[in-house]
Length: 134
Ligand SMILES: [Zn+2]
Image (cartoon, rainbow, N blue to C red; front, side):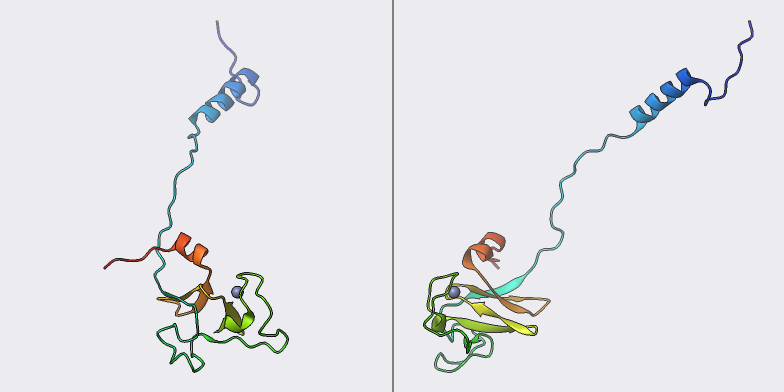
């Protein structure tokens, strides 16, 4: 008996089988675990008062890195929302066109490559960085 040849498109049964095969042969995608490729190296010092940063001068003068916090719109006696200390105890770091307020107890962090200096809250810093023992 001679079987009629069907084209794939016409043979529904074959087409269904072929589709099944396609699905089966497709590799199963699995999640892979990734870790951060580059570690970020920074220099950091915990800042409490003017003069604490090694690149700043004596504590009775305004530092080059951590400057005095001065804002004509905010009185020095007003209380900081973040740390609860009066604003006169805060520092200021110039950053881009603006600046960053340094709360007492913040880390002052400088990137090894970027050379940017910025304050970071103690909890956040200690969560993300560990001391490099040489
Ligand atoms: Zn504060």
